[in-house]
Length: 94
Length: 257
Image (tube, chains in turn cyan, orange):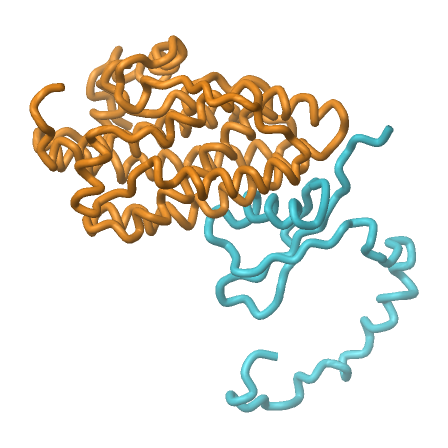
């Protein structure tokens, strides 16, 4: 019998954060308890205002061995960076 | 009965009851630190213990003010003896297994949340302010302990057995939380605190709903241990707890870090 709780990946949005960030993982029997555990493990020093939890086996991930074909082709394409524009202040964070 | 209590004496007893409940339960829960069955529960229990100790500082701090002899919350916590404590017996019973600890937590949280809900409206602003701060923490404690009681009660045959045994063991300690005496009457008269007996219906509704969902059976007995909240007869366990909790201040009076 499998008696380990499933693994959950935890994402927290900070006080002034724009988006949820991955902060770590923990075990819990279900999603509701995963949120509670995340509250206790990752927000006890006032780190966050919102929690997302995702069961780890629901995350599809790229394979580290595909690193070459996936990412190296973009290394030599500096013209894809929008660094040649002045961004007006009114636009805010991008 | 001795001469009627002054309002100040009654208020002091009430504050000791509140503060000693949170102090002794906070200490008990802290005993799990480093020993809980999984890391996540270990941290959650430590957080709960710290919340309760924080509430103790507020209740016993105010008790020291009301007593008027300049005693700090620390002095009240560490330099009183077992017979001076006014906590209910429920919070001093040993932790037992994890299931019993969580069942005790749930039974206390259920009472605590209802009590604080009334104290927020206390005619004494200091009491109302402490209750407002504590009730946010306790709302979470209750959510967590109730969920765990349901999870384990309505879990495997083995976990169900542990939780039913915990409920059978702890139920006789529930009644004391709702026993009213002259201290309560004095505070009800001036709107500082509710009559404990008046909280029972809400408690029964809340506990009944959660324990039913947990597929647990409330023992059919009205027998109740008492003697904690009036200090007349604590269990033998309180003295053992105090020797651990107080030894440093007793061995090295006034030690600080």
